[in-house]
Length: 307
Ligand code: PLP
Image 1 (cartoon, protein in one colour):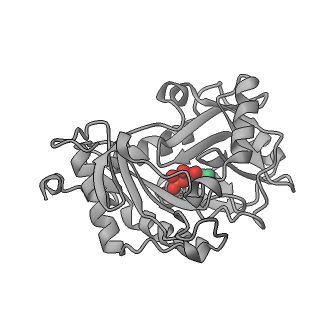
Image 2 (tube, rainbow, N blue to C red):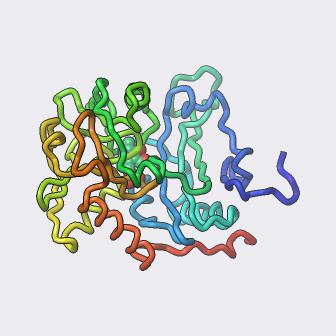
C-alpha cells in the first residue's frame, strides 16, 4: 500500500525502482540474498545533514559488488542521487544510510545458476543507531573474546562487506550469556580480527594498532588511522595476538554506526581505571569535532525530496 502522501518520518527506502516508507521495503522470500546470504551492502552515516566519506563508502561498495560478481545495473552517479534522495525524503539530519545489492530471484523457477538472477539495488535511510549504546560507550564497553573463531578469510573475504554473521551471532550469544556487552573474535591462528559490526584497536604507549587480517577495512578505522599523526600517535596495521590485547594500555572499537567507541574491559582484564582510556577519549573527541568542522562531509540536498 503506497499512500498519496507517504510518511517517510521513520525512514525512506528505494526498492524495485520506487521510493517507499521504510516499513514497505520488502525482499521476496525467493531472493538469493535471503536464501543464500548472496548479498553485499555498505552503510554510510549522515550527521548534521552531511554524508561522511561518501566516496570511500561508494568505492568499497563497488569493490564488494565486483568481489561478489553482482551488477545492480545502477551507475555510481545514480547511486549517489538515490542515497541523497532517501535521506532527503526522510528529512533526517542524523541517519544510518544503507546501500544493498542482492542476487535477486531467479527468472527460471528452481534455477541454481546465479546468471539467471537479476541483481537488485536497494537503499534506505533510517534514524541514527549506535552499535554500542551511548551509555555503554560512556562507561567503556565490556568485550568478550568469544570461543568461536572468525570464519577463515580463505572461505569468506572479510574485506567484502557481507551479512554472513553466523560466527558473530554465536559470539554475541556467548557474550550476553556471560554478562558482556558484545564479542570480538580471534581467527583460528589466534590473531585478533574484529567484532560484530566494528573494527578493534589496541593502544600501547603512543602506538594505535588495528589487525591486519580477518577484518573489514572499516571507513571509521581509516578515519582513525588518518587522525593519529596529528595527535602525535603512530598508526599501525599489524598482527595482534591475545597476549597483545591483554597487555594493551587501552582498547577501543570503531564503526560507522557509533564512531569511536572506547572499551573498559576485555574478558577479565580491566584497563586503566575501568573507564574509557585517555587516548581513546581523545581520538573519539577529535573524530566528532572534525565532523562538526565538515571534515570529509558531503551536504545532503534536502530540496531533492520534492524532485
Ligand atoms: N567490521 C564489520 C564486520 C562491520 O560490519 C563493520 C560495519 O558495519 C565494521 C567492521 C566497521 O566498518 P565501518 O567503519 O566502515 O562502518
